[in-house]
Amino acid sequence: MEQANGTGRATIVLTTRDRYSLMRDSIANLYENTDYPFDLVVVTGAAPGQVRRWCDEEAARRGFRHVAVDRPLTPAEARNTGIEHARGEYIAFVENDIMYRKGWLGALVACGDETGAGMIAPLTCEGRPIHTIVHHIGPEENNNETLEEAGDGHKDFHEEFYLQGNTLDEIQPHLKRRRTQSVEMHCFMVRRSLFDRIGTFDPDIVSKEYLDFSWRAREAGESIWFEPSSVVTFLIPSEDDPVQMVDLPYFLLRWSRSWQKRSHDALKAKWNMQEDGFISYRRSLADWRIVDHVTKPTLSHVPVVGKRWGFVQRAAVPVNFCLNAASNLMAWRYDRARGGKGGKRDHAA
Image (tube, rainbow, N blue to C red):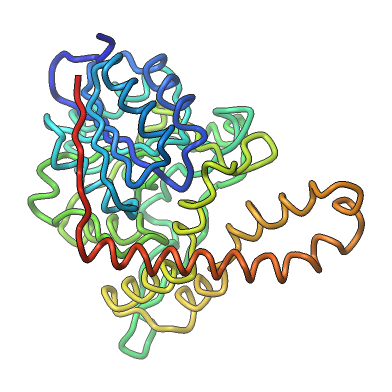
């Protein structure tokens, strides 16, 4: 059995971000680079058959718990399911397209112990080569990335993507443990007792969900810390790590216009945000992941014409129309399945 059982202080809950094709490599990398004792809970929702079978087999081999739900899950629903099976003082939430640098988990636990933090954010990089390009390091508390009064009784949010896109070498002066304003959902740790105070994740928020949860924690007076010695990398869809056929059904659902609209509406209502500004800007970007990570890469590989000027741009319009229709159909089927709740299987070695 390869499960790293020990102190029982930390459970890792691994959920699906938007695709399955990187799950095997991500779980293998997790075991290779995690030396701090942990329990692992893997949650899948309506996963393709080969993915579900592999998770069941791997759970038996390594000794982790695989919770398989028979309907699609929003990422928040999957995390909430994982919480039900988590043990210990800390829960580290990770997505299934993450690569880890050795010592990442122990560093998060040490930060929690030494600061009393309710949430801890690692240094999150993006793409390849891994552990090189900054994705999220947690904005400093005096940064302008805040939820503010908009002057009309509503609020608005200014997003800055603090130091995103720089290399780790370029940001060395900023790499110190400190309080921060938010965590990112790619990877973060929560003190389990926090859920007793603020509740679990909002199942309807799938876009900028990290803001909702971080704002709720800060509103409750909880501290959030950035721990730079914990390093992970999010493998963003790219030429190196493209969206594959096995990923397509859930990827289209995850980034469907239906799910995005519901998410934006929920965030707006919950935080009394104005339509103009952050919300309207996010609505305008509802299609970009499907367009940039599925439509355009697929069209660019069409033999002969795929590299011709203008082909991709013109052909993207009808292709994206069809993909959006498919994604909204899947969202409708999700709503029906969610109403019936769906079955759950729990496999543990």
